[in-house]
Amino acid sequence: MALTLLITIIVAFVSWKTYTALTNPLRHLPGPWISKWTNLRFQWAVMTGERASYEHALHQRYEVSLASISAAKIVYQIGSPYHKPTWYGTATGFGDMALFTIRDPKAHGVRRRLLAHNYSENWIKQMEPYISEKTRVAAKKMVADLDARGYTDVKKWFTFMATDIVSEAAFGESFDTLQSGEKTQYIIDLENDGLRGFIRAELPLLNKLVAYLMFGSANEVSAGLERMKNYAEDRISRYFEAYRADPDHVKPTLMSKAFSAVEDGTLPKVAITSDAMTNIVAGTDTSAITATYAAWYLSQDPDLENALTEEVAMLPQHFTEENLIKLPLLNGVITETLRIRPPVGQGLPRIVPDGGADFEGHFVPGGTTVAIPAYAMHHLPQIWRDADKFDPSRWNDATKDMQSAFLPFGGGSRVCIGQHFAMLEMRHALASFYRTFSQGMRPAWVDGFTADDMKPVSFFVTAPKGQRCLLEV
Image 1 (cartoon, rainbow, N blue to C red):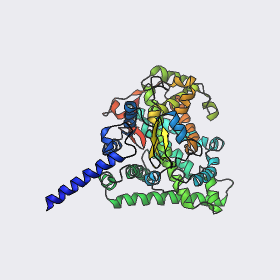
Image 2 (image 1 turned 90 degrees about the vertical axis):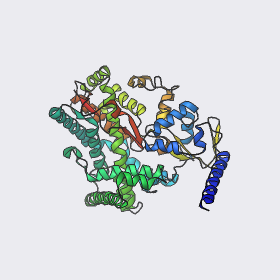
Image 3 (image 1 turned 135 degrees about the vertical axis):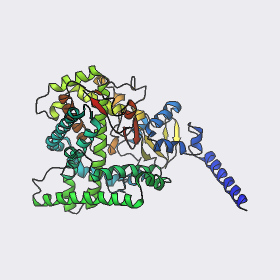
Image 4 (image 1 turned 120 degrees about the vertical axis):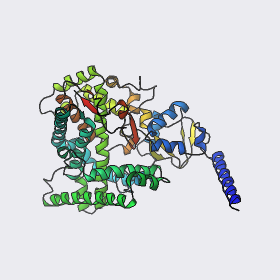
């Protein structure tokens, strides 16, 4: 009886998989044969942090993906009908409350218009003094490391720098991780929830098992989420007190306009909490890892590094964004790092609208999840000469196609609202770093550090495999 039941289940399962494989509306698209039957190979790439490189490899072999300028223009067009799926709310845990996760285009437009002023270049200039200060402190901490042990972990200090900058920008108060040299509990909880959220969205069937293996019991995970919520609400409440006491002289933040909207009842307070926490997650690793990879690539090219140190040495002592934006090599280094190692290299999902669409001669039915993979876009050989080479000089004469294919911040009306803030921060970070270490830096092959530590892994945000970057003078 049991054997008969088992055979019946197996036959039914095989029959169902055969039927779905033969009737799937995407069956005409070329790709790995196993993908017609299961997505386990893709899920393995997700679990091992290789999704971005796996997508790129598939594009190179089958030449069918949305890694093209024409596809990007369709998906990212202003007023695009390619809306975000529930994936974003699941990954962050914010549902539709944060700007990043709102699915409805009209609601997103209202929120973005509300926040746009506080993310504008003119507004962000008010934050430049403490951004500059934090980057200088980070460089001094690295000097202290070198004096104490002969090398420094630039990823560690760039991460603390970015954490302190974005926390002050979001909450009006710094986490002061640069001073302590240690991660706060809030940062640990944020990192854990960011990874767990990615697993929750990408591997829903394995979510509970993987989360338990990585983070422990459900109670521990819930405790972390509760700490994050309480911490954010406490910081926001303190800012509200200062805002209500003297709204015209309160410290400017990325959320200042939103506070007034909460006061007049047009925005729920939970929306500020969601957006502020999103800023912390999005604004820490992305800037820190870009600065880290820039320093890493330059450490292996002494001539290029020397040219940059000479360029930033010409800056006045109290330089500002107006000085930095005029430096061709500094900006080329940052832009090239964003190209070769985009912070989010895998495709971010969108839903094909009803009626379907044609991509590169292939019809994709409505309701299908598609994505524009930034890493693959940034390595298309027909657009980028020597695509795997770190070459900032390519931006001296950037073509229109290069500009169209460059998507480190996304595109269209959903482009990253914090891109100006991020660029200002990275310019200051690298200028301070190379004015401090004008003699140049080299990889420090100590404490087991190898080039393998710098290989990228991608769990939503791309980061060095070893989570460190050791350099010495």
